[in-house]
Length: 172
Image 1 (cartoon, rainbow, N blue to C red):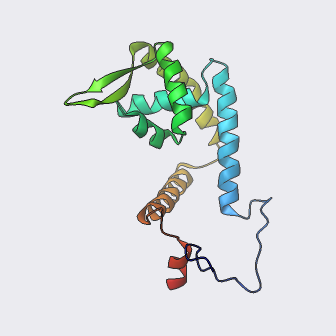
Image 2: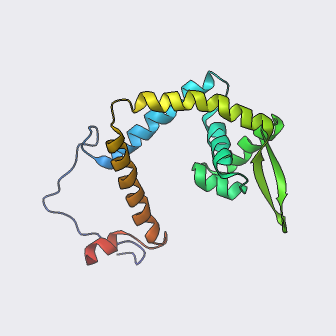
């Protein structure tokens, strides 16, 4: 066996979930995120705002100035896609790059007044969209989902990316 390959014990008999139904939680999450992103993207097209641009604008509105790598991490957008989107947002006068105070090697992104105005226009649409998709989910269920997903992310972040998770499960 390859030394870098995790030592995986096979379950016998194997219980294969129905990946096409709501039985397998990771698949449900993937399908949910895809549906939300596709539909939100469609809604945002009505105001000529691509979904990636909305994500960038929303992060900059909530966080203030950020570096490109910080925005990439927070928006979960590949840096190459993000760079093209930021360039377009700069050309449209919605974001600007400034040198960070005390560090002339790092540039920060921030919203312009025009970008702030676009955020408010888009937020009216986005908040109505979120209210619609969560209308049948109670506030308590929303908090339960949010807390559970935060625990999953926290658990994943505790393990360095270059260490397999599989071996840890065998040791438990």
